Image (cartoon, rainbow, N blue to C red; front, side, top):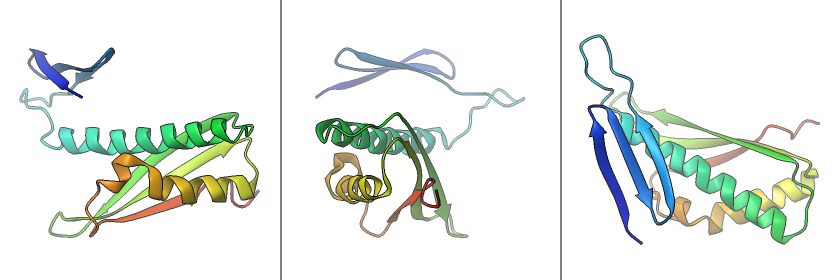
Length: 132
């Protein structure tokens, strides 16, 4: 795999991997500077996408009726700025409670990108539909 990132103009990048492309536009502040945390934001977005893609893939493989899916990733950092944990808030509409429990358990251990996260960082899954 090869990933290519090219600056198109200040605060605007295009990234590609194979046939996939993504445009990244950083919002500049009043001084014209972009947020220094942008790469971390993109990493969090990649984690959420990887979890969502893994859930969708597993549900399809099991022939489950996953009607819609939303994954939000929320981080918690220490006072020193160290990342402590990431919580994935997941809405997997159409799946039964037992199916959601199973897919979250499987994805936690099989999602390639999640397995690359430092072992010191806790990973949590929160089922938004658990109380229904």
